[in-house]
Amino acid sequence: MAGLADLGRFSEPALHILISLAAGPKHGYAMQEDIGALTGARPGPGTLYGAIRRLEEHAYIEALPEQERRKPYRLTDAGRVALGVELQRMRSLAATGLRRLAVA
Image (cartoon, rainbow, N blue to C red; front, side, top):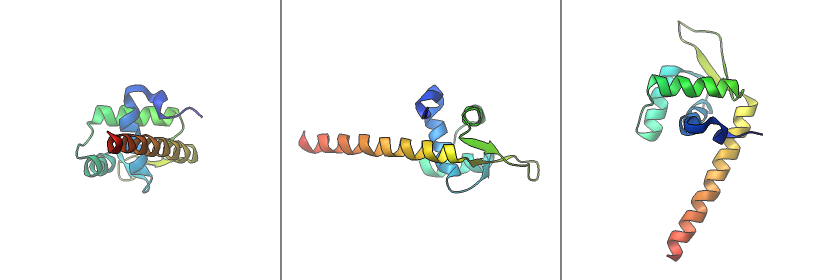
């Protein structure tokens, strides 16, 4: 499986989008608001929709039928797996960093 690192500079926004969609389908504005609440910074439209496009290309998310002129997206099974792998990698990295800090 590829992984979020393949998304290049969009890997962090992509991670935030996947985390947002893990709670259920959302349209772009709802994702911006959710990501802002999670991280303290709302992604701009260019960053958000560039990452959405790349996530769709990797089949990590998919568009749902439009609702009231808004296009919602949802996490695919591949996206759920990729998100789990990335979060486990981050957990391992954080644990190592915290152990090293405790020793220093």
